[in-house]
Image (cartoon, rainbow over all chains, first blue to last red; front, side):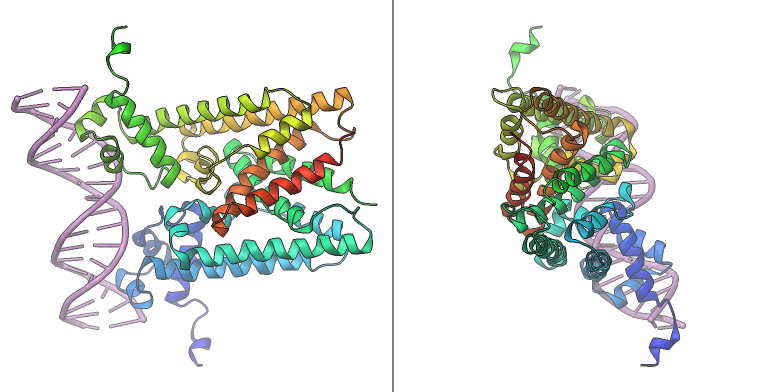
Length: 195
Length: 195
DNA sequence: GTCTATATCATGATAGAC
DNA sequence: GTCTATCATGATATAGAC
């Protein structure tokens, strides 16, 4: 389509990006259409032309954020190295810790959780992440790199939970230090199960 | 004071309790004075007579919730048993998993994090919890129950993060199962360091 | 202490001109 | 596609009667 070449940043595009930022910063409940329009430099009419309303626009934004998180995680998890090394790389990956997780934070939004369509991308993303990590743990068990007796899905859930909870600790204390502590604690426990 | 005997549930009291419920359910941004008044069965005038406004009332509610969480945790952590047993008891403690943590969820509220006074009780509670757990880990190290090489503060942070992140997983999936998985994963890793 | 106005601005959207 | 009304309702209070 010609439109592909027209603009690197269409109005629709700017609306989605503005919504992504605001959802990350203030959540769904705390993000108003007006704020979105101002951030996107678009009028009321534009927003309601491209989207049926706030939920519709939020859905587009959440889907893109979820896809991006997934791609970023895959980049680290699909890299080189042993199972432990890849999990470590994921946990130590650079993050904007004090901003929190743009996907995980949505679980604290009552209106997101209550809406099956809005919750779906959140659920699917975290579900995929746990599954991806579980597969890596299983690899480690199969190769003998990790000592037996661990359930891959449980370890995977603990890894994801540590990250998500690490954000909570960091935002509570106003410092990324507690996030790092939690991650190092989990890595210390996990590393003692490597050969 | 005579007033102590007057009513088991004064208006002020009902306002605080209603606010606690709503903050837990919908967060600070999602909780309106009007909703609080309705839930408490109090009029506008009453609320603004007892409190200067929404932040003031929220502060009273948050402080009480924080105190309650602390008391509940202390009940488990101060119990009988080995270090591992007490940490296990804390992690396996019954929880209303799908509702999330009434204290931790506030860290996702931009207006709470931005206000030093509102954030303080949240910070102090999680800080206390990490410290309390770190002390127990230290006990375990001292007694030889836990193998050396672990840093108490890191393990404590991982424990708290797993719980907080477990809530995220559970709310995303709409089921407590993922919370339980994460907890069991962490316990499996920790138990392999006990003698 | 509680109640009922009243006030101001924001929310979330619709209508219709351009 | 974008813009400017317009609208009904809610958010967050203040004022003053009772």
